[in-house]
Length: 405
Image 1: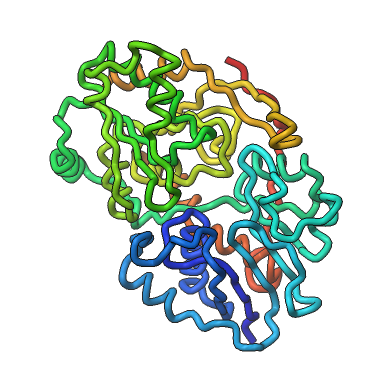
Image 2: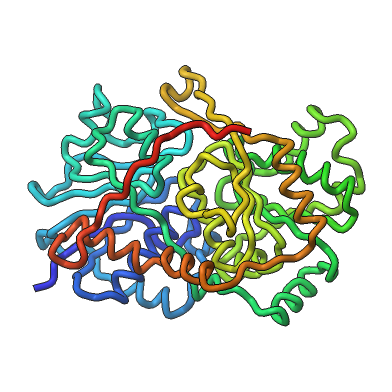
């Protein structure tokens, strides 16, 4: 008899938690061998809706997700929650193994956890395992007092069909459709304009590169619809801190995308880019960097953070950084990364000088395949139901030393 898994989370929107949940559900449906129920939890923000914030899945994927039955009163064999804030309260079914997704970017504020207790170790009193997507996030959760043996790293995956690398003809057509000339060197980033994403650092590096290379272009994403965040304050802060840097010539070659991007739109943007650049200060995983890799686009990322888990040398440039502690008044015990700005400039400058270079070959293809959603789903089932598939093997936890410039 198939084990029954009750999943509680979000569907139908493009928030990262919802995207991860939907792809894990699709992978389990494709695998078979486990009965699924899905309970939709309230969205974190009241204005989120499945019309305006569509995740851009295919009609077939939507149909499969819609076919999942809701909880029907049967006792599940395991419960898995994936939403924000993390709910670590006891489930209604006493004695049922419980798993909860949590991610930590630069700290764990009290507002993150829906069921708060006096001591961090007590947070997992009623939870068998916390699932987190990177060793960086795991180290921060353990640093905050969560029991080390209960925090398990299971990385996110990538849909290699949705984010397939284009051939030369398709890439040329996509670039032409987006208004890029053949000799333009395009840098891209789709992160929200918040401090931890390092968009300000990227603007400074790009402006320096654009002063040397008139064919350099930068594409950024505004996030007014989903998060209510605009990049305007970031531009203003950079202009104040670096007078004369954001010249009219620089500004005309920075493009802000306002629309919500589905998977096909994201794939087209990654395919057009000569490098995906993410000089983050803190991330829980950084799924866009993995999607860009799957599209054959080289990535430039901060060294020392979660992207170390899936951005190997040869497929990515890991820019040196220093580890810094957060302000204890805001995030007690948190950490972030200070990227070397000159090394970041050098990484972008080298791309601008050499021109287009796409990732290809057996090593790249094998890496993308290994980072698919099917292995992720298999590993989760191995944790929840050891008899349902290959038992998940905990990965060694690397020493968290600061990268040096």
